[in-house]
Image: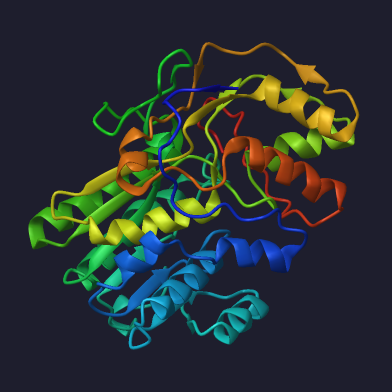
Length: 356
């Protein structure tokens, strides 16, 4: 592993201790930093989270609720919208003070959604997009048009992806926000479509907008580190087709998304969200092998390019992640050693042709 930028002078919050079970993991993900509390203290209107039932949504909702409570903003509601195919997830959020709303965003009328002054858009379709591109475009690009019209008077933070960038040299710092986009594959193209649709409405209606280009969040139950560590732990081969990656602690990514609401503007505030390191997959595999007392089995050779993002703007604006890469590696190894659960949803980070 090598670090692109210099060490961070500050971080987004105190570094938590290693989570020893799912309850402790959720606690870590839902603990707000003082900076988040300060930013959310100034929100005007309730916070609506669309697509709250996904991998990142529940922890973002809990984080927002705790930050608002810490700021003394108990007058503001956090409203989590999803189909809630798992009612237990909705019940758990309700127990934490989050209002849950069952709603099919693709079939329902957005006019029936609750009013809110702040919206976090987390809806997306990725896996299966190569075989069903029309659904990817409907979810990733058409739905944002309806949401932008419904919430034209709100602040909107919309999750996007680093996949909108091309593969770049691993010797560079990665793609920056002002660099040209060049999405590969239906998923990446439809995600750029999402950005363009939201940006169109922001400029037309003056809707404050932030766009979050995220590269590989880690929450121990899933993520690039879980994919690599699981392979090493089980003795399966690790592909080096994509030899270098960016990852970031999910708690930090959620914080940035929420804090970006206060930076949203009609000329969209676009920010790459990931860690400061360009991490070598080969070295990560060997690190996990050392943790497990085994051998890493590697396949292929590294390419000279990768899907890499330069998050200098993010770190300057929001501080560096409170959980650095070396800590995430140790946490991930401990999670697997303890036999704790994984989501069973691989990232497919090694896919290079955009076919997910």
